[in-house]
Length: 199
Image (cartoon, rainbow, N blue to C red; front, side):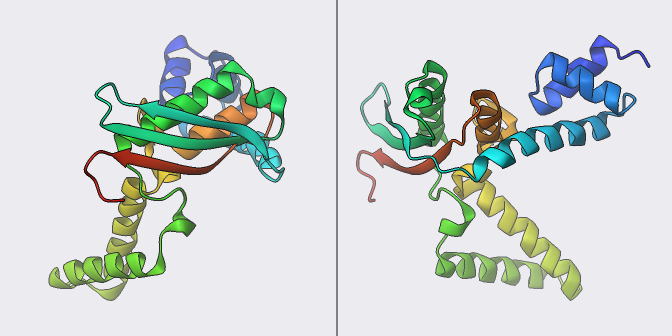
């Protein structure tokens, strides 16, 4: 079946995939947009998934200092080889992630980094809010899960919507970079400093 330019554009806008990849995905799924999204995710995830098992011990420390010198970020971005760590695209990615951290204020790198007591406190608040709505227990649990997911999207770097394109998460951005650069790329740690803010 013939795939229109509008269909390709719609898929590109939804996924951030390249033009040819979007066209191939639509051809493979007979123009079904939702199936094409899944097809792209499977291909992208497969590429990133095989790389993510490999150790990333090279890399760089990226810095970002806001123009008013009141806000700064330090970030360690790792790759498997020094060759990729010296690549301009890798360095640009590190800078973009540092800028994102400055703007989005994540408190944790990944979900596992959220302390248990913080999660329990959030869950207790959400449970109390849901209980006030007098809903059945299974509905309350869904409400709590939804609110916990919102908490992760706010506070966890890898779950946050990418500052420059909120249709993708930081984690999806990293997976795209892995597929593009052909090596595992990981964020090891970051620190965000703001003048007058307690650490």
